[in-house]
Image 1 (cartoon, rainbow, N blue to C red):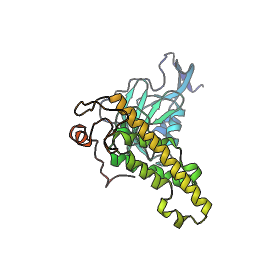
Image 2: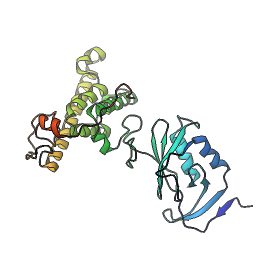
Image 3: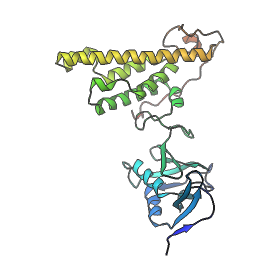
Image 4: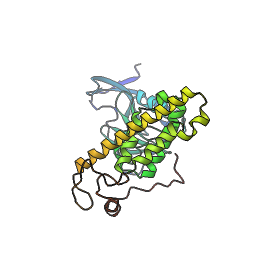
Length: 295
């Protein structure tokens, strides 16, 4: 007997009414979903977005149809957490389901061919995270973060990059992640601080090069790579600061005109005419609890 039940409806995977959006979270373990994938009867349905029929099953824990590929992709993403990982449904709509793990990792399941993505850590944000484990926010929320948060993420990312790239100066510079961190810091008037954090964590500190590197050629390579990256990141910050002043045009505090190529001091957020005006008028980014900071 054919174990696949054919449905004539055109509803896509994960496109069934959920009944839990906006309500209290439905919590389950990854193993529950894996067991459903193994034991629930297979069904198939027409999916317009995938240009054909889709095979899957009705999930009780997700309260909608899902494909085995999606479940396996989720299991792969949570391999370190294991089958006992607890998840809860944050929200659901006609295009997918957003899950949250017990460690506050936000995951988006989208139909039909195993679509699984990691989202920004900010609740209800639908944008992707920049990098799991080090920069867990999207571009927008990173730029809105407290300078302490941006600096902590910069140190965490750079330290990991140094280990992964084995401290090779030829490969440590030029990353997109460093650019995003510096551009976000520029929004908060903290680009100098974050650039220093990145350089100190990515490369050997300049006053320690001769002590840690004995070979003169390698010393020169480290100094050259550090200087090159400093110039690159400073250029990124200057460009972002000019862009913000050009777009804003008038100080967000007092309304005075802003000059694209004229800054009062670098520590002043570029959307304001002076540090005093910024301190008086701008909304304060959320201050992180550094005692609990994972970085």
